[in-house]
Image (cartoon, rainbow over all chains, first blue to last red; front, side, top):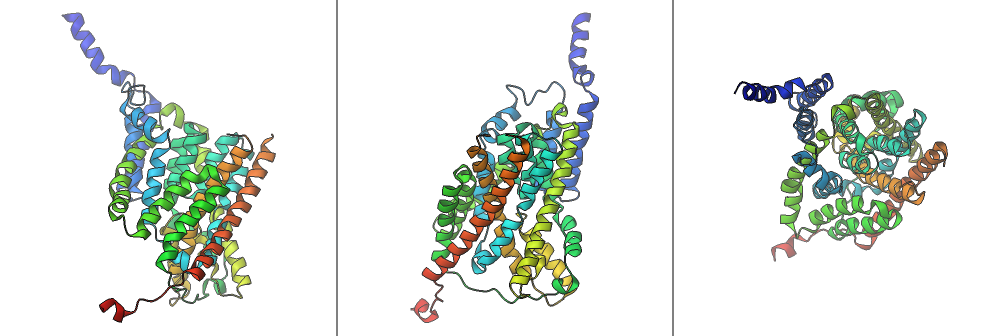
Length: 379
Length: 48
């Protein structure tokens, strides 16, 4: 009886006796993510499940990412197979209105310039010692697009999925703090005051319906490895614009997106086990992710300045900062900054065009990267 | 392949390719708009 009692108490205390300092730190990291999501409102839909997942996976002996753990189950079916980010893309496509871009198509080029940070960060990551595929996973934070970052890092560097995802979503939510100082640094007072005329050119329904189909076919033929990324975004958008599958569109942007976001967040948190996350490499990932988003903004604005010169001063370079995928946050930042210098300046619709271009640009950049890697025999 | 050959190849093709693809898309949009121009709905025919 006595030994049975001792064994029973030992079983009860085993969690406490197996709790290491590393796990306590990771539980605090998870709690910090919960704080940022709940109290500060930074991407709460992702940071709350990520933070909770990080806490759960670091509970000693629970083994939630073990062979029979429930987090392992969701991770295997949704993240390893890359299905979760793709389902999120369908929802994003169904929610995105490309009308501002269709009205003003030349602005799409800013969406390409806004991705250069990805490739410049790749060089930086290689310079500081990341191996090739790890560097690709770090660089993709510069896409400023959570599902793209998850898709690419789950494919090439699953051990870095937690750090890459946390960096991607955290910096996306910090765009209103990161971008304005760079915008002020790189533009002159005169440039910031440039008033852009109305870009309103109505678009026919046929154009809106054909756009996602043409983009899918053209971009997927050029970068076949990126077809899942491009195809799912454009499928969502086609459902939205066709207007004939309202139930599917609503399910994609609500029920499916919500369920997948919950499971995806938990799975990302579940990759943040102490032995994988508490490394100097994680700090490097966070630092390089920050640099990537700054570089996106820098190149976007510089390209905006070039377009300003080429257009004879008709384009406000500030809208170049919106050529990233953080939609519509980045466009709002541009609008607010523009109005600080000219109260009568309404840059929002132009910035929305660049921002929609950035959404497409991030997917295209990732698709091209995947195809180039496949072509080089790296993957 | 050394890391710098890898890095500069991916960076150059990536940046050039992204710019080229999006430029082509802007041309496709212009083409679609030319082929399928917007036609305002006639309020009278809508009523009828």
